[in-house]
Image (cartoon, rainbow, N blue to C red; front, side, top):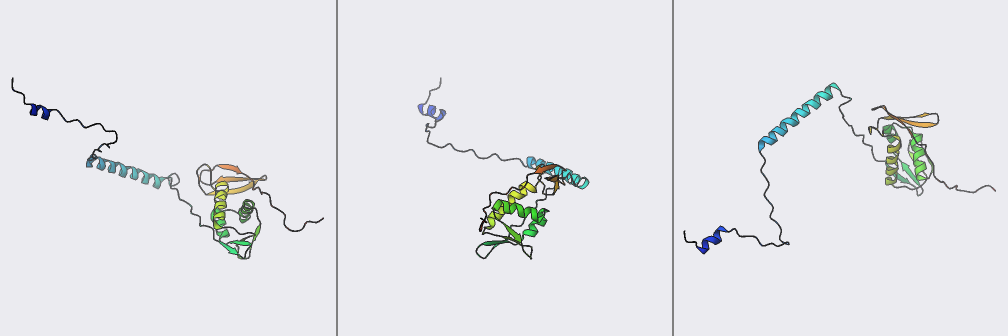
Length: 194
């Protein structure tokens, strides 16, 4: 047998790392991807896009083009110390395809105040409110009385039948009844008759 050298034995035995729970493990370097996978994925994507383009051309209603309706933020200005003017009220009503009286009643019920339309078709509210108050109330109105629950489309019609309001969607054809506008407690101001 060959003589064994003690220094040679040390070289053959792999050196073990000391076990230290506080020491972090070294991360392995990332695997390099083949370019053939990327080419195959790109080919699949282009085929899929081509199929969807053909679908859109043949059936534009079923293509799933979701056009997002963007509402302009309410332009609210203070008038004096006790009034607020909602400048673009009529524009927002036209964008939502709703009667101004219905939107106005909802705003007044939610704010607990009253007001009217002036000669320039601006809404005058009898109290001071911040624009964010109007924004939040308009969001609630849109969710309740404008947007369809089925397809989330804003293309709806609000109609009154037998003292109930019905919301009918023009996109999917669904129909649902919506709640009446409920006014909260409004304190009577001024003198009362005896």
